[in-house]
Length: 258
View 1 (spheres, rainbow, N blue to C red):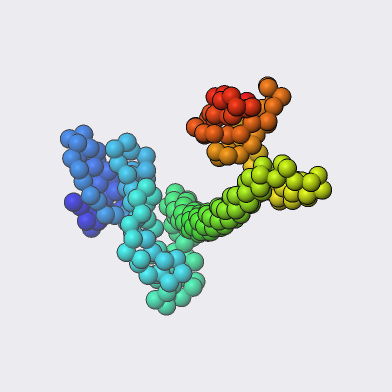
View 2 (cartoon, helix red, strand yellow; view 1 turned 135 degrees about the vertical axis):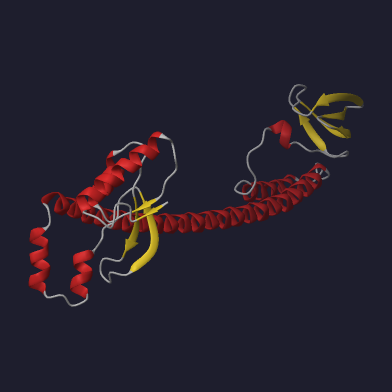
């Protein structure tokens, strides 16, 4: 490690000597850490393969160190700025600036521009991070709302299904009543059928449509119509997907869709 490499002698000679030392160390693949205020060595770090600059950050407003190292760009000395801060008259500061070599001025301007760009980039990065966090919060809120809506929809659907089952049970009871009233007078039969139709209409919004075979559930003792025989029979037994029906004293085993 070299602290202020090339210091203590003529700046041009000290910088040249420091650059030669670093070239020699690079050729030996030695890891080296160097501190310097020489602009020539800062340029060496920027232009030489295997070398990289780093800066110890200063707050440009307060001219106080932030104790944060920034890799990839050289630091500024802030010598004239610090001199002005300590009360050196302005005409002396301006005189010093006019005596700086053009290359040194260009380097200082370049460094100042780089620092400003870095500050702008950090500000944009912070804004982007804030926007990302806000978007993440919005997404989480939307997901919570979606989950709540799905839960509410599920509860509504569950209640609708319960109501449908209740109505369906009542409908089946009416159907059984109807099967036992075939000997009733036509007006009474018509009244029962009207009640059944009304219950069926109430059932339609709550219960999704099903095929006849899937929706048909009959119990022993119920009377059913058998289109293929063009006859009315009485269910004597019910199986999964099939039933036994008595028609005029004869027993037939039929599929539910029959």
